[in-house]
Length: 477
Image 1 (tube, helix red, strand yellow):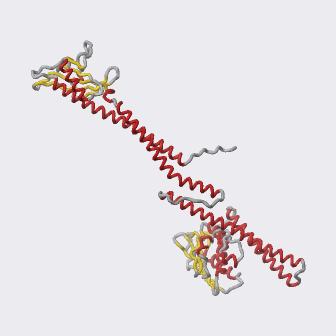
Image 2: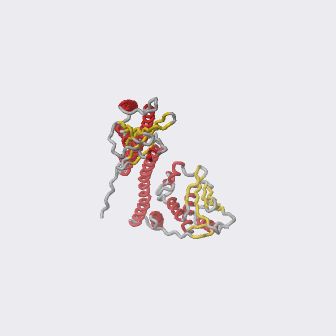
Image 3: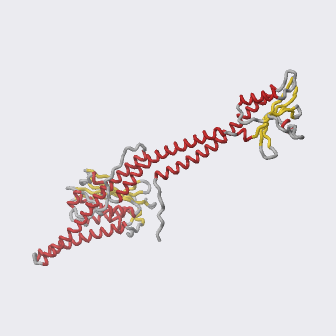
């Protein structure tokens, strides 16, 4: 049963779409808030105008003798003031006596019998601007102003206008819509340009990754990005590409070297056995040929075992039995056994052990393999009157180190980063020692399998030091 491939989108479209959605949600919120704010501002402004009109009307509605002016004269005064104030809709103005009895309206309206008096709640209210709910569900604002003469209340001016009329901002709707639309287009353009600028180098890196996947390591990436993160991404990718190119070249060289190293003993064995078979050599010489063939077979067998062991530990099919042990005894025993098996004894081996016993977690058999491999490498690097030194010591609270140091010719600086690469062998070592170049990589894997590590501590013209690190146990004294 095949799984459906999830549809993917480009980085440019992904971020542009989300930025635009966020922008428009923000603009909608801004538009709603702006409309509310404009309505509230318009309401407050127009109520102030109505209050001014009420006060102005109360001043103009009284004669010098204290009588209230009604009729066309007052209507003319009110209409003139309304024009000056630029009210969006003509309000209804009531003039009443002190008890709220309506005596004049502008414009003139028909008033039913029994409805010719202002409500007591409005008349007695302390606020000059009141919001009133009508029976039909609508709401109106009532603005009142007293008509006084000689410190005596002789009447009232009431101005009534519905709430919707006061909050109308039709003239500003188009301007607000144009402004929001313009901001939306401008924001989209800016977001698109910025997203394209950011996604372009990432897209270039993605296309370069596709080329590398196809085996083409010859790629070109621009390094002129101003953004630090983009610049680091491009630089890291270029360094990775260069590293892959080197590793690919090294892999080809190592494969050729391994093939040659495996083929050489086979060719040698074949020639030697054929010479004995054809009676080209006889007697003691034929025995020497057979002895040489057996040595080549043993060397070939060792190479094959190294390959099998390396593949086994790489696949996790290698058995490691880690347990607590006295490392003083283990290191001393390994050094003694290795020294006893060496045919040439023209070197000095110094084992430095602490007086206090050190207990650590390790597999004695695998630890022996690591140390012996390091000792063999150290011996191969020695010159005349060489010296090898093994040191056991505690480094920190929970780490135990075993240093294998020699005073040989050292590892060239340009080869030090590759010493733990599988099948890698230095230029000089290729010519002097036959092998597959799996000793150090295999030893490092064995060390890691024991919760430790193997590192190249230092190497120069005065010699080389490798360090094995292991876990310390609380039984150390």
